[in-house]
Length: 354
Image (tube, rainbow, N blue to C red; front, side, top):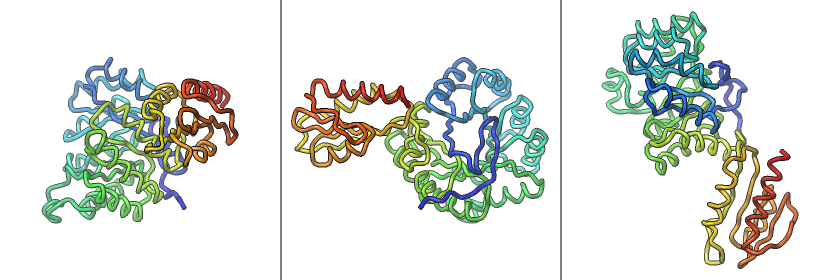
């Protein structure tokens, strides 16, 4: 049974992360931060898809100057992603971001990290410390010879010691590897030791096909164990797709219910309709429905009636006709030519009343 690990509650802008807050879905822009119109436009699209926190790259001083101009145009918390140059983190704080993401493996001077923490402390600004397999400290790599869960954890433990020295706990951690098993093990160890909120993801997961599988396995496994407070699915594609996949992972685990849940069969020799074409048509028609409706579109009468009956609304095809179910009751039997239209009409009618 799912029992969520209780962590500290951290506020990033107007978003609560950890504690009893819902597990949030976030992403990162892939625009040039200096290009304010493109960045704002992308964030607006991300907001529409349900993104609850957005991170932007801050590789130079000019990007810092863009931050307040971007922030005033968007509605979700803005986090500055800073690497290597601690001065960019200090300048981002000065320009009013809602949070920072830094990697202790890239800003390796602990005195400079302390400067960032002390500056954030003055504004009660949260920081996410990203422990990443691609940027571990050289001393740790020499000790372990390769990336391991223990190597990732040592980096995290070192960071916790610094936080305790400066008495600052407005912190979120992420521990990510390209290796799914290493990510799962390291996060499991961290969650057993500390109560800082955890941001989950598989770093550099890859193009959509592979990346979705890796992320679903890694993030899903940890969430099922009650570990994790916010997630990002890292894919080499439009960040809109990351948000969609994030919500599907949460939906599959019954942790967040946003948008429709479409059930369909893989088809077999018993299916006498072009179910693939039908499913694509249904998807196009329901893509803007936010309500948590379960919709079944089944190709034959083996499992079809049972799945359609259990859904909020559904079709079970038999030869070239289909039975339309709504809330467990049969609405009627219709020909292949009209049943999808009837289904969409009922779905839209239901969504208007929810």
